[in-house]
Structure formats: structure tokens, C-alpha cells
Length: 309
Image (cartoon, rainbow, N blue to C red):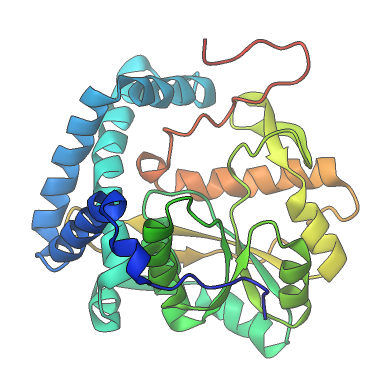
């Protein structure tokens, strides 16, 4: 088990400073019970409205697409960005689905592919590092995955204790327990015991414990070497997966890919480049559903200027 202390709901969370959080969570909870097609349209509208208000994020989406897909025409990137903005708004409601839907409703919307890879590793008693990417429906993907085979969540506590309570409660529904993202020893213990541990190495987490490796057309993307550390120290399997919304009707496919058998051991730089290829594959399953609003390439090698100026 982890030494992570689960947040609990106390009277202090009813303080006026948290009323806006409580209102937001309450609204998302109520909306989660609406028919899916209504939530879908509301999500599109929310995404478009948000990008008019926070124009900086829209510029980041456009810049990331330009950096990653320079051979794509401007018209193609514009279409991809429009779809991505729609999906960014829908992400809030997909989070509500993940946190509040009953299991039977999740099952009605999700089809599974490749779960036999997980079942085989489970039968062998082998720990699994589940390589996720920050798709906009990741919360729903984690919920759907955990309903079939619960794992261990790597958790970043929110600074807002009220929101943190609801976030934790939503995520623990389909996880055995949670581990603080800084608790590397806890992750290793879980992997050595044959658990499945969620891990998302696709964001820019800064220079600490990282290296630069290619990602799409960007030659030097700051990439965590934590993947290499966990795999080399636990001898676990590495299994990527992706959650894809297939149509506007709300059908999803959770795709589990075969284990990465050619993982470069004891070579953090090669491992980072190798994992980034798996990340690319997962993103390309549905590039319009990825979190392009993150400043993925903000950390640059010494002497290089910002890619976002």
C-alpha cells in the first residue's frame, strides 16, 4: 500500500471560499445525468467559449500543431485545432462521466480492445507500467480500464482541498489505491508486487530527472527519465494504451497495445526516445482528442530560445 493520505470531506470544506468549487462540481454532477448527445453539444459550446476568453491557450494549441506537424497544410491544422477546441470543452463533462456515472452506464459506452495483454501479464504475476497520454478523456479511460482490471493511480494532489476531495473520490472508484506522484518507492513496491501502475510520461515536467528526445517533428522535447528508472528497478512490463471517442454518438474504444518488448534498459536517453514513439502512436489514434493546450516544449536545452515567443 501507499503512504498517501486520502482526503476526506470535513466541515471546513463548506467555508465560503469553497462555494464556487462546490457549485462547479455540483453542476458537473447534474450535467453528467443528461443524455450524452446533450453533453456533447454543451461541451463543444463550452470549448469554443473558453478559447475566446483564454486566447493564449488557443495560440498554444496552434503552435504545438505547427511544431509537431510541419508537413501538414495550414488548412488541415486549422481543422484539427477546431476539433480539438470542441473536445477541450467536452473534457469537463467526460470527467463528470468518469467520476459520477454508474458502472453500467460506462460499460454501455465503452468497447475494449487488447485486454488479453493485461490478463496474460496478470496471470504471470508481472507488474505493469501503464503508459498513458494526456488525452482529453483520460479520466474516463482510467475509469473504464479500472472497471475491468483495477490498478494503482499516480496522484497529484490539488492545491484546492475541496476540489482535491472530489478528484480523489472520483479516481479511487476504479483504482485499488493512489500513490503520490513523488513517491517513487511506492510505485516500485507496487510494480514489484505485480500491480498495474498508471503513468503519463508525455508532458514536459521540467529539467529535473529528464532528458531531451525527439517527439514528432521536435528534435529536443524535454522528456522524463522516470520511465527508465521505474522499469529498470522493477523489471516490469511496459504497456501503452489509448482511449478514443469514435463518433459524436458517444461510443469509446479503450485500446491496449502489446507490451513494449524492445524497451532499452539501463539507457535513459534511448528509453526516452523509445517511449516517445509509443506516445506518438497513442496520440495519433485520435490527435484531435489530445491535450494540445499544454506547453509541451516549454523547457529547452541550454542556449535555445523559447518555442512559444
